[in-house]
Image 1 (cartoon, rainbow, N blue to C red):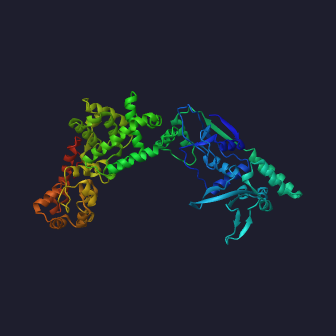
Image 2: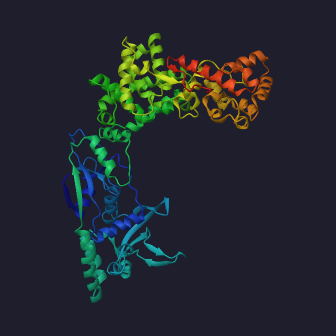
Image 3: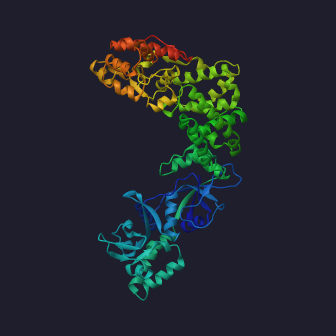
Length: 580
């Protein structure tokens, strides 16, 4: 890529006219006072400040982003952009605001990032000409009222008038590129003083001329540079290490056609979460992936949802397919609720949502037939217990969409459903919600109507889970397990179930034989009926009454494996099985 040097004066003039702007995906300008002082010292010494990178704009190009004027530029410059800054925003904005805007500069306080400083910048003429003084010490940052005070708030330097500036020998950088203003300041500064004339001559040569003659190397990418390449370049060269999300980039693209993607997403996600709390898991990228999948399924030989393809998705395609995906996600929320997956924490894999929504868009009402429902459930649970969505999901989404829809319409069972398996020994290592299969087990327990051990009137439901603060609890308490040397098995899914906060409080640190008596008494149920409530969790009550952890663990492990098998996912037994 060729590098062309541009005069600082001309570049800042182009910024002022709106010919140089920012792509809308750029973060707001934010630089602290120390960085600005350091940059000004660099320019006044004519040292290189680094390369700036820009993207040429063309109304007819497929690579278009909404433009935003650089901070400090006044007036309406919409539609005047000829290039967009990809790298150099902080530096160019700082130089424009100090040297060109004529306005006080807002910057961050390096000692307190939450505080905004309002500053004017000056060059201390005497210090700038002293070879023993570091140039940064000659650049003076002055408060907005142009008064420098000591720690007792007494004014020690007053720069509120041009005469005061000249008396203090502090040159205001706000006029450094304004020749008439600089000449007027010079005449009053020099007057008839020959010593000041000599000082000014040196200052002009060693400071001012270096500013006015300063050149900045600029790399300009052609307007036909692909969006993906623009984004990659931006992320590589951006000195702040900003990684742009796909949604931010698509937002900037659609904004060029006056479409507000964030506002549209805000409406969509608001409606979704209100109807189905579990859909709070759906992020803006997930939604774009589903739209891209559905759109490309109908418009391309092979569906796709890779980042490049989402960036290239036309606004017309989004407007056509996003309402269908939105409707499909509402259907998916009901699908998950039927599986007793009610909240974001209950969801095994949020990455199953984009292909699930896309499948619904493609199949429509076909998904509601009993055969289609059975197949979709098998695909869903095989993904969960086969733990198939850990990584590299983009290509998996395409397989899900194409092969599952074909299967529903009478084609062969997808190999990833047919070969999905759950190893029995996996029960011994599933300990937290980080495991999709761990979360899936509890959804299946609620599905097959398990009861709380305190509020025993009806099976656990979405309302009961919330009302009674139902959460995952140990069957054999941690303290008991520690005393009885149970080891790692105490933390596994086998030794956990869903219980209300009230039931958990009764259990506390007690041995099962003790808390069973207490819970049965508190529930006011006959022993036989209370035991049924315990059995609904696939737990044999007699094992608890005998405080027999090993027997409990073996029995429940086998019951959980049968529960998993009921979803259509193959369970592999043997080797180091549960309870080994």
